[in-house]
Image (cartoon, rainbow, N blue to C red; front, top):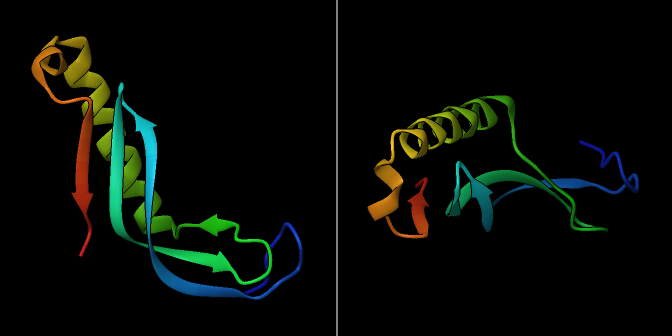
Length: 80
């Protein structure tokens, strides 16, 4: 697989990242991703992205219902 940013080689790895998602900061550990060996760009596959979007939608819905007011500001998601 080739990086769309720099043309470098992409490797499949498991990474840790933190992203704002659904009103909270989500820490994702062991997230399967493609990582460029040259520039470090990260991409996740379609099925992983679909699962993350579903999680974001659920968190946003919970926040609208007021359920996240008592929740921690970050949620740790271990994917493996």
